[in-house]
Image (cartoon, rainbow, N blue to C red):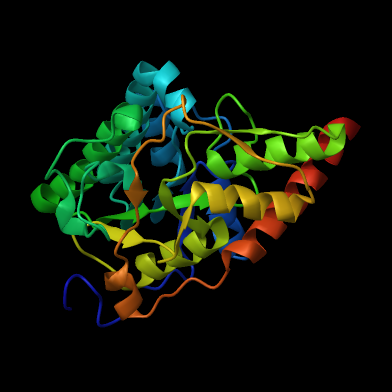
Length: 319
């Protein structure tokens, strides 16, 4: 086993798998990927409640846990509610990880975020960049919680021999994303604005920031594929980056989304709004060399996401 990669894959066959956060974008994608497996449901459990989580895990006895549950949001949501982003995420991950240890869970995968890395980290960002500099202020509370989560998994591995691992994805998008202008990430926010402008025949939808920052995006079903790959092939303390390896400016992304949506007007960039980190692309060479690669190109993924959004609107209106 080199760098944590297994010589003999860990088999998920016959395992009881708890996808914590199965109703969210990542959790639902993992559930699709594991269709046909024995997936446990936890809709009624408040993961911030230590007693409830402990009792649920003791009763259901999962063999494997994928910890995809989290409070997430874009720049505005993080700026408006840093206490909630820090408290809720700390409670969720602390309760699930400790309950997994107490129940003797065979394997746990903690889902982190690329925002754990310093704002001025050398690009592309390697796993070694963790805790080498100052975090991006606009999502610091969320990043601190996620850093604590991956360090918690590493500590349980060191002290108790638990097979707890961590994955750090880049910016995600896809079916199940949060389409809410007050709380969503950049792709659903831009998609909603472009769609609303198309429907209302508005001329100039507004884009937050200068449009100059460079970002890397990964389709959520590609991430689900990577997480299953990690469960089956990785057992190490160091977190593993998972990205697409392709970066695009926010301006070019907005133009691409406008084309997918069919909006033909002009986009206006509001430079008074924060840009966040100016460049953020991760070095995913460790998982790439181990045999995993993404398969959904950005244009294809945006089209599929927009189709899901339109269908979701129809379902919401019919409800």
